Length: 436
Image 1: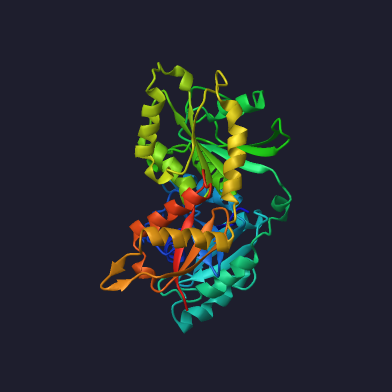
Image 2: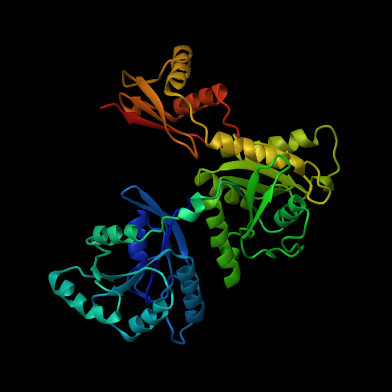
């Protein structure tokens, strides 16, 4: 199930970026007293009481003729369209303004849950002034302080209650996979080749695909898939057009909703720095991953071409050492018939569960051959291991002190688990936890 999305909107300089940074726990958005500093939408992940969600910080909605005001307003409206819940932020210092009322009129048309939060309510006198905000027509306003963090708990409690249940998505038993990559690596051509029809527009012009296109199909074995072709992801500094900014979020949303992600590379152009950024999105999301090298037919090959290309991939994508590699050509259909079976395999591995007794036998044997490390005379002791989640498979190690679990030894234990069980295509997470 995809994480819900929350957008923070409001007029300029009410503290949206301050609230955003406090909720995500990092100084991602620039905070400055000058209105209009945040021009593009900023995305990150947040969590409240175990509920994870995507958070969008938007440029202030400004209907004046100031520079960038039109673009900022367009970006905010796009975020409103993508959001499941909207936090309408105002300021207790200035009170209700004409700009607040203009923003309210935009939100009336959104047909989304809207929660009104009044920022900068830092003292009792300012909190008393929030009653004026009932005139905006969004029910009880929530007094908060981005500077001090007060009131945010009550606001987040209300936000979480508005999250959609996404029941319709639960009924879909098909394997969802998306294709991601730089512009013009051939994602749309692969989609068309798999379907046997021109489902999406194909062009040599980078950025032809602006939206994420969902398509269902059935393989020869009768297994159903939902395929999502996404717009090419560029570096943030190279995202110029509003429509292309919109497509980046749709691509991120597609990753969030996918079971399997196909990271598409261009064999003709080789590996670029942006390829690693694109793959990092899927890896950080914990999705099963297959590396697909497209346009393989364009290379002049010898006996070492594939081995050399794989060595380059493994060197440049060291964090994706679990991901299988397929060399294909959308033009000639070379090896495309292997993709459905491989997608099913890595999807099964992504959902795999291991019995605790079997898992503990593997870890006991691993520790017997390579004893646990010591630090300042104290030795790490592993008492018990159990799997607590799938997608990705997640294992909790109950130990005497998590600080003694050195990264290198954790990596060793992960490798032992991978040797014992087939987790091809999926990341696995190991969490050391102190036994109480």
